[in-house]
Length: 227
Image 1 (tube, one colour):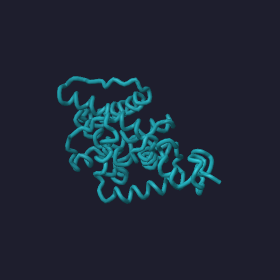
Image 2 (cartoon, rainbow, N blue to C red; image 1 turned 180 degrees about the vertical axis):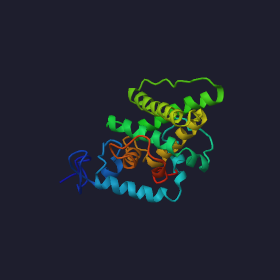
Image 3 (cartoon, rainbow, N blue to C red; image 1 turned 135 degrees about the vertical axis):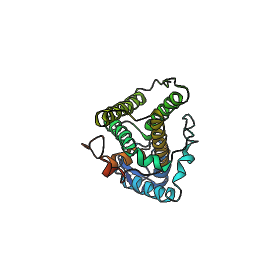
Image 4 (spheres, rainbow, N blue to C red; image 1 turned 60 degrees about the vertical axis):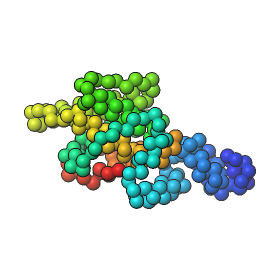
């Protein structure tokens, strides 16, 4: 029997994306590009494991995807490790908002979250540097929805601070750093392919369904993975 995609090479593995058998070459070449691979596909999981082992040698791999996402802006700001400890709950809250968006719209890919994060980061960079609120124009409804979810979490975080401490200490520059951190994490986690959901699946693993949005500080340290 021939491959269900190329119809030339011999089929050797079942592909749940096409509901048929394909050859290893088509699997490798079309995975998460033309094929909308389900997260539980054995071959997709193996490919991610191999990529993770390679990237683990240098977690700064997010820079390698900068070319693949040429349309996005990556804030060139320093993110001290101390910031990650001081703002663990903020980063977790924003990560939860991303996971919530992806669960609400199963048609989202890593690319959608990354573009939305880039747009938000650009807006906050403008606010921090010039005190001018800059709304990144986008006609993409999905990206707008992700951005709204993240912005809602920022407001809820500030409201929680006000309630518990009597003041809001969260600066726009803190939000910018958190967004930049998550943007780099997304670029480090994704495969860079158009239909990649590696970053989304990573978020799902950190935040199982029915979990509280603002995780306790005692759980935070085990969930933040520095890219």
